[in-house]
Length: 322
Ligand code: FAD
Image (cartoon, rainbow, N blue to C red; front, side, top):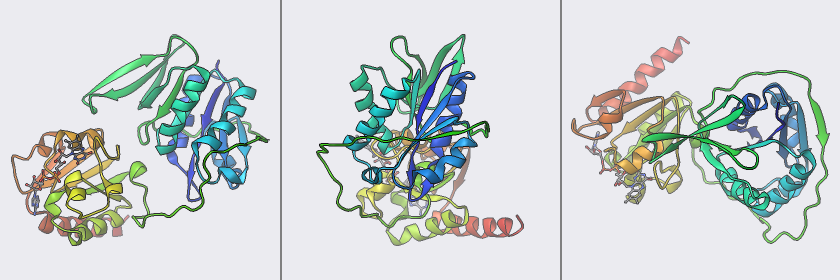
C-alpha cells in the first residue's frame, strides 16, 4: 500500500481531465493505500467533489490567491510544504506546461528521479512500472524507479479515467509563500477555440495545403461540430496561416485525441511526433504518395476544400439524430 500525492490542475474554472487520469494512475500505484489530491488557488474548493469521485481520499486545498496564476516559485514553495507534511510514497503531476516546468524543480529539490510524459502505469510484483514514448513516439520504454520514490508526469488523454468513490477528507492547508522572484501582473489569453488542444478528443489539423488563414475556416467549422479543437503543422504556422500556439509536433504540442483529421499535411516525421499516438488518424491529401497516409487509419485522396464541407454536412446529419 502506498500513499500517493497527485497535483491537480484547473484551467478557466474547469478541472483539466488529465488530473483525473493522474488520479486513476494513482489508484493503481496506491494498491489500496491513500490518494491525496492537491488543488491550488482561490477557487480550489470547487473541485473537491469531482476529485473525491475519482479516487482522492484526502484533498489538500491551498486557497492562496497568489496561486491563481502559475509561477514556478509560488507553486514549488506550496507543493514542497505539502510534500514535507504528507511524506508521500509516490508523486504524480499532469504533463502540461505547468507539470513540465514544476516537476523537474521538485524532483531536483528532493533528489528524486523523474519519469516524464508517461502514458501508462502498472504495478508488477509491487514495482511501479511507467510506460513512456521515445524516439518521437516510434517506440515505448518501460521504466522503474530504483532509488527514491516513484515520481512521474502523466500525458493527457492516455489513461482511461475511472470513477472511484470512497470517503473524502478535506484539508484546508495553509502555506507560507514568500520572497517570490516573479509576480504575474496580467494574463492575456489568445482567442483560440473553446476546446483545449492538448486535451481535445477530436483535433482537426491544417497544413500548408490549407493555403491561407481563410482556409482554416472550414476546419474550424468541422471542429465546432465535433466539439474538437483546430491544430496545425509547422508549415501552416510558418506560412502565417495560424498562430504557433496551434502547432503540433516535435517542437509544438503533443496531442492524443480519439480522432485526428490531418488536412493538407504531408506527414513529416516532426509532425508525426506530435500526433502519431492519436487513436484514429484520418488524412485528407490530394497527393496519394503523401507520407501521412502511412500512419493514417483512413485516407481520403482529394482536395480538402471539397472533402471537408462534405464531411461537415455528413456529421451534421448524423449528429442531428444523436
Ligand atoms: P507540406 O510538407 O508543404 O505539405 C503540404 C501538403 O498539403 C502536401 O502533402 C500537399 O499534397 C497537400 N495539399 C496541398 N493542397 C491540398 C489540397 N487542396 N487538398 C489536400 N491536400 C493538399 N513540423 C510540424 O508540423 N511540427 C513540428 O513540431 C515541427 N518541428 C520541426 C522541428 C525541426 C527541427 C525541423 C527541422 C522541422 C520541423 N517541422 C515541424 C517541419 C516539418 O519538417 C515539415 O516541414 C512540416 O511539417 C510541413 O508542413 P506541412 O505538412 O503543412 O507542409
